[in-house]
Length: 78
Image (cartoon, rainbow, N blue to C red; front, side):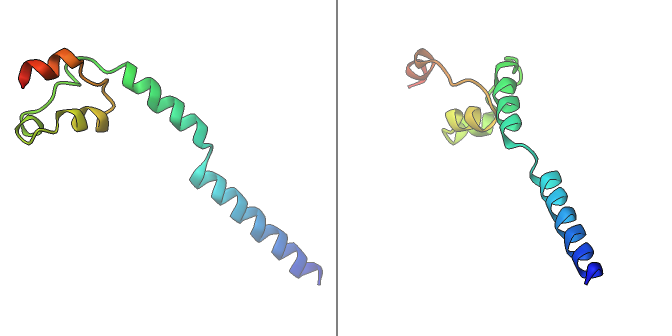
């Protein structure tokens, strides 16, 4: 009976540590991603031609962590 208890305790410990290793602390990731958007340079946030061709400039900026375009840029191109 002691062997079964020991095996049960060890298996749950390994499962808990494995879950922590896989999922970690999610709050830290959100802060890191938010700070990455601020550090992007103008060259990194330049919209590629394919995104302009299909009219997805704003989506491209959003998905790549760049700040949104200003309203004056949008009205100049229309």
